[in-house]
Length: 189
Length: 83
Image (cartoon, rainbow over all chains, first blue to last red; front, side):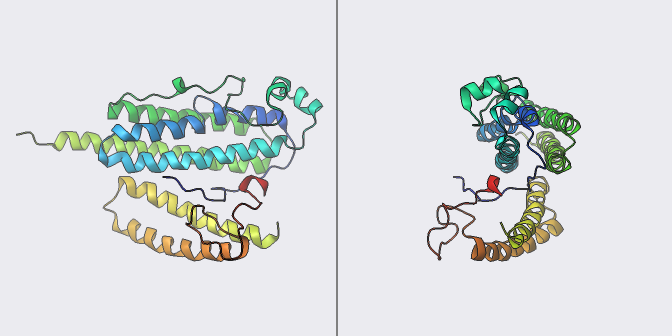
């Protein structure tokens, strides 16, 4: 069961219409290491992970949906006032032809989201290492996105998201430690 | 939206940030009683701030987790991406 809360996790403000930046940001919407991938990856893995880390996967997976909504808000605000000419100039002509200004789950190059972006090996250590790697890749992507804009309002929200990746990575590393410690102390009779 | 909307929302977002952080931390450090105490204090403060916000701007949660005493305001704007 999930409940929707009618607010963003962290404020999203933009100081200008910037469809080009929206095009790059969509990487974190429907890209391999984006927020949709993250949410679906963790919430899917949790069914077969040991009890000690189900709570963590549930909570981080849920938080990723809040991040997905923040990215959507950025893209929406950056494109809502753009003219068709501006969209074309920003490289979004092909997107406009198919979607108008609707958001779509594709990456910055326009490749549609695919389930092959996420892994579920059923081995807890393999799955958690996959999650740590995903968080680090998302952190790197946020850094490149921050580097690509001079909009300080947008940078502020992106920096929040970048820091969340750092925290999630840390928590996943602790989850690995918990499982390894558990394995080493388990008594077999 | 008026200034008060953003001020109240910001205060709630700040407390919620503390709660998310403590929640994830407690997921891997469930024995930390100091963190647990902070979490419980903040959860109480959160309830108070959310109730205040809802009094002014309508329900934050769907499916009956927020009551709707002043007409059906749930489905009315603004939605989070519109402010």
